[in-house]
Amino acid sequence: MRMRWTAMWFTPVVVASACFLCGLSSGKAAMGEDAAPSFRLPDIARPTKYTLDMTIVASEPVFHGVATIGVQLNKEAQILWLNQKGLTVRRVSARRDGGVYRPAQWGTPDEFLMVKLPVAMGPGKVDLEIAYDGVLNDKSSVGPYRKKAGDDWYVYTSFTPIDARRAFPCFDEPGYKAPWSVTLHVKKSDVAVANGPEVSSTDEENGMKRVVFKETQPLASEVVAFAVGPFDVVDAGVAGEKRVPVRIITPRGRAAEAGPAKSATAELLPREEAYTGIPYPWDKLDHIAVLDLPFGATENPGLITYRDSQLLAPTAKDTPRRVRMMRGTMAHEMAHQWFGNLVTQAWWDDTWLAEGFATWMAAKVDDVDLPENQRGLAMVQARDRIMAVDAKGKRPVRLEMHSRAETEDVYDGLVYQKGAATLKMVEDWVGAEPFQRGIRRYLREHAMGNATTGELEKDIERETGVNITPVMDGMLNRTGYPLVRFKVEPGKLVLDQESVGGGSPWAMPVCIHVETASRRCEVISTAHAEIPVEGASVGVEGRRSPQTWIWTNAFGSGYYRSVLGPGMLDAVVGRGYQELSEPERLSVLVDVRAETR
Image 1 (cartoon, rainbow, N blue to C red):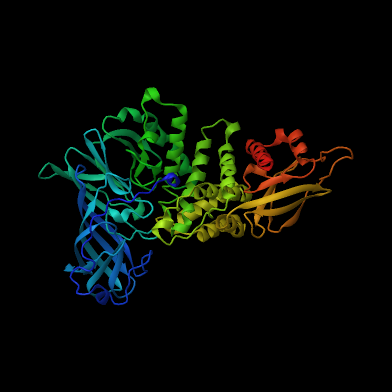
Image 2: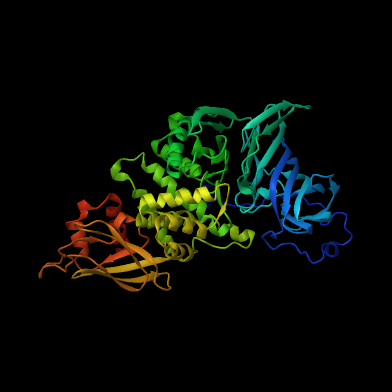
């Protein structure tokens, strides 16, 4: 999850970069018209494979690395742009078609690495080899950083959304996914972990060892992760269809605090596999407790990071509430292994494809542990809270990003909660089974790649036969929500909608639960509409209540407020309340409360 929307961002100390255009007589002249990008990398090349070799001593503030990057050029070019931030580049070499490496010139303007190849190359394959130094900051929790506990130093990483570039040169955008091979040189007394399983560990000189990790499946740079330190490693058995090994990684001396975390994966992971129809996609699963992490967790494949107080607790001081919150966080982060990692958003405007989905999936998984009369209530409560925020018009769910400053808002709570509420509303509207088929199709067709909201909509529409695009686009691209006033007239339900936050009428499914009838939904897209309801009546003269009760938000998942006309509330509360589901009952209460405000 990162429960990233609680994150705080800090500016770490920056190592002085190498000369802007090392070895060139004139940076501007040498670059010609190829000015530095403003934010996004130019669509000239994409990575095909990363090989990282890093020497990390946790007690030292600087680490050393060599990054070898396979690059596919889609046209002839001599200048390539990558991302870096605060790295001291020592050497850059390039080769094509597996030939001999030749020195290349480079510059490091702002958050970019410009590489001038020895000659123009492409289209085709080019390999870059970049030697560099980087900072392990101990004053922040961004990029690669270190923390001290007693006499022990620990190194962790926190790259989302655009800080992998602080650890190695890379194409630091979600649309650039590639396999990663990682080798770490660390002290013999330390434990090193990364996304992939350890393949080998070999002793080296000066009290060091070389740890090699298995190459990963294609990953975006933001979820590459590693950690180094005197960790305790708790074996949590195996989980899921592939029986992947699971471990809890804790600071030294805290293994005894991992009891509830140790048992959670084997219970939660199979539920997510069952829904998605896809076994856990990665080769192992470590849950690591991070010292002083300023937010909840991050979903790095194979190495999920958590705030230590969220994952661990002394047995004598633990509480059921903390354990439940921990399991909810773990369910969210493990849901990301499909939504965000297996299928990654193409750009930051679609971050909800990761965070909204993981929030929605975690609620579905968590419900299994609850008594039947409590299931589905958390989503209604979350919808109610986020609608109060949404009324202020801060931002829509989908929001384009054009700068580092704008990415500080990429994990806003609306992305999580309104994104999840939109999914739940559409699921109830089109039907749970057709919706699940659409989600499975989406995951299959974009596995190990990227996707957009438009592609999700098409995949769901193919499986359900329902045109969901106008509804989803409105919910995701606008601020606010519909407020709908209902009244009963003979044979029909009349509604008038207005937009909280302004703007034109919304396209939305209005789902109704009517006495003696099945729940049904009608898509409304006009300010005034009428829904036929057989037997609907304004009631007997002298009575306030209609003869037929109607609740106007069946399932309790419609992202709108209901204002009921004369007698409607009395009827649904007085005669229909026992027939409503628990989420419907709660939705009645939250809408009445909202109206009284």
